[in-house]
Every structure is written in structure tokens, then in C-alpha cells.
Image (cartoon, rainbow, N blue to C red; front, side, top):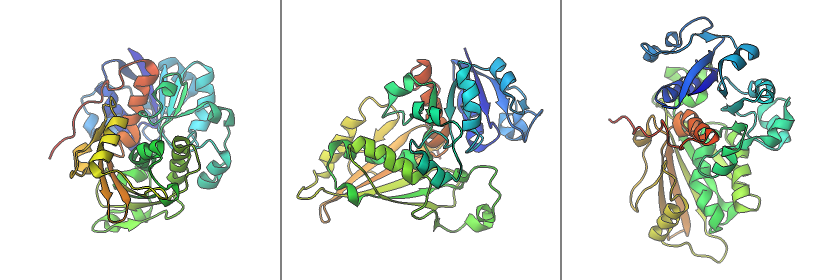
Amino acid sequence: MVRVGIIGASGYAGGELVRYLLMHPKVEITYLASGTYEGRPLSDAYPSFLGQNLPLCEKYDAKHALEKADFFFQAQGNGIGMKVAPELISNGRKLIDIPADFRLKDLNQHKKFYAMNHTAPELVAESVYAISELHPKEIAKARLVANPGCYATSAILALAPLMKQKQICLGSVIVDSKSGVSGAGRSKLEVSGLFCEVNEGIKAYGVTTHRHTPEIEQELTLLAGEQVTLNFTPHLIPMNRGILSTAYASAGQGKTLPSASEMVELYKEFYAGKPFMQVLDCGKQPCTKNVLGTNFCHIGVVVDERTNRIIVTCAIDNMGKGAAGQAVQNMNLMLGFDETTGLMSPAVYP
């Protein structure tokens, strides 16, 4: 059994990690760090964990953490990963950083979008941006993994086959995403997150400025082999969890897109052997309810012959494939386990 520690266990991503890892047959949770719940059981934060055998939460201390666990997840927040990673890595531990400290390779972009100087730039170069389906070999060899953002995961998975096949005009890409409120995190206490502010409404936010934009462009540029610049607009919708992203792209100059059935086959071939990627048949569309609480990703593909444009829809759970689920999948790859271990439970329905 691999001893696992979670830093930031009482946040939404941390709590979801605990839920997944309790079902994992090859790991044991031996360390939970939460300053808010120091000295208390995690069930005080999440009564759903009553009856589970978990260590008490404690304030993060590197020396004690190193004694208690061999593999770590950092889920506390931006700016924490760069502080804890150097000591954990130098002492032979492996780390998955779920927030954004190691996602952007361009540190100028990191400073622009996160308004902080990076204190571990040497580890940024080493870290692997870990979309599990796209970089499994690199993840398997990594000591430090940057878990992707939730919106970024959905957008990149929706567009990756098109980037590799060079079927589209790269300057025509638009991504429109809608997310449940849990994406803002558990400790966010701004008025905009209150029930009365969110319920019975939908709104765009971070238009042209959202932090996941440079992530999406960074990874799609690598896939395409040339610079990709796109429009990304996120929306907040009144549900707890889930993301539905819709990506639009026009055919390349002088090209005509394949038929919808041919494009669906292209997607199925691209994601063949990827157990969490489910490309739906022609005429079917994904729904966030069908991936609730899972690490699955459902994709629908439509070709609009009238406008010579492809429209790709992608549904994930922002707490699952968009955060904790993908983190556990990446852990499995890093530890040499089958990547599906502990992750194959279907969505709860209805």
C-alpha cells in the first residue's frame, strides 16, 4: 500500500480526493493537512465521511508530512504548491499540484494571470502538465505533476483531435463553457457566490481574462505545432458541479470538413484505448448529469455543412475529470498502476 497525504483536505477538491482514494485498493490515506480543521476529524468538514477510517486533520508541517506519507496531493490553493514542492521533491516524494502553480511554462504569463512571482521556477521546467490521455508516458516518469484546470481539461479534450489532424482554421476557435458553482472552491465567501446571487440565473465572467485561457492555448499550441489563439468565455450556472464546454471552429482555408459521421470516427480513433473518453454516436449530445461524480468525459461532434464549421461538446464533472478524478488517474500513472484503478464507478443517477 502506498501512503498518501493530502494538503488542503477540507476544500472541495481535497474532499473529493478523499472520496476517490477511499475506494482505491492500492493506497492508504495516512496524512491530512487542514489548518481550518486542525486537530479535528475530516467528518467535521464533510459529515459524509462519518464512519470512515481517516487520520485527524493537522496543520501542514513538512517534517511530519514526510514521516507520514510517500505521495502527496496539494489541493489548498494557488501559491501553496511552489512553497511545499521543493522540500517534498528533494526528499524523494512525488507530488500532484491541483491548483495552478506549475501549469504555465511561461512565468510571465503566470505572473500576469495569477499576480504572483514564482518561487520555484526550476520545478516549473520539470513539471508535467498532466492531461492523462495526452501525456501518459511523461506523467509516468514525473516527480511533479501539474493537474490541469477544469475548464482547460474540457476545452483541450474537445479540441485535441482537431489540432493533431490540422482540419481547422486555428484562428477561428471559440470555446464557450458553463460550470457549476463548486468550481469557485469552498472557501470563497464573496457575495457573488451566495445562493441568492447564483440561483435562477446565468452569467458570463472572466470574459477575455480567465486564468485557464493561457493553459488552453499553451497545450493546443503544442498539439497543433503552431501558435493557437482563441476566445474562451466561461459562464456560471446554478448547479453544484459539472462543466459543459462547446467548442466552435471553421474549416481551414480552401478545405471542406469531413461529414459528421467521419468526424465522429476520427474522434473515436483518436481516443481509442482511453477508457474515460466516451465519444458519442452521431446525433447524441453529452449531459453533465451523465458524468456526475465520475472521471469520465463525454464528447459529442457535429459538423454544420451550411457554415463549414465543426461544433464539439464536452461534458465532465469539474470535481472529477476536472480536478480530483484526473489527479487520481495521474497518480495511478505515476505509480505504475492501471490508470482506471479506483475510478470506474459510474455516475449516480438520477
